[in-house]
Length: 248
Image (cartoon, rainbow, N blue to C red; front, side, top):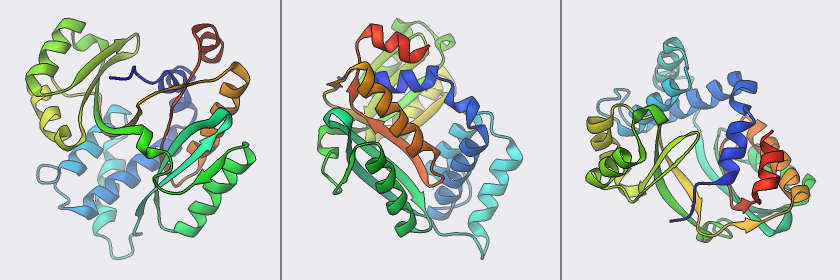
């Protein structure tokens, strides 16, 4: 399968999660609320809610915040969020997928389109770039969970497709449809995962130079700063020398 996204590694090393902690908690809470509304407010009976809570805990989100987000789903005055996917092109012909949870589609579409345009990109139609990505399940573990051999053995036993390990952790990939089953099997053998979620993984990456990589990171930063945007995926890659500069 395609290698673990350089873009994801860059963003992780840049420490954006520390810089936008409050915003991150807000987005995690929104996913919990949507998950609770989509099914029962009991995580033992609602797989999506269980995963949303697990991911929130992995980011050290306080229990009170999690409980509030669940209660908000049953409130009469709670917002109704739509799940929307936007697709577009960034500098250098790169593909970008944006996932959002919004209570105002017009506002979010306008904001996302403006961000693409200002960065020299263009928002496309739904399906314009997603065909070049695979929608898969990704389960991450800290390096302390075990060595590469142990992770591979556990992943194969659980029915996963691939395991990749770098200095940040272990990344286990499985079919989107079997994410819940694989995650549950891995929890039995390895303990609770760091994160469990569906992601868009590029089938082929597009090489870009340092200038375009910086433009792309700025574009992605702007998208992630929007309150309605939950996740951003891209297919660009840079060589090791540029990667080191961007990660510094």
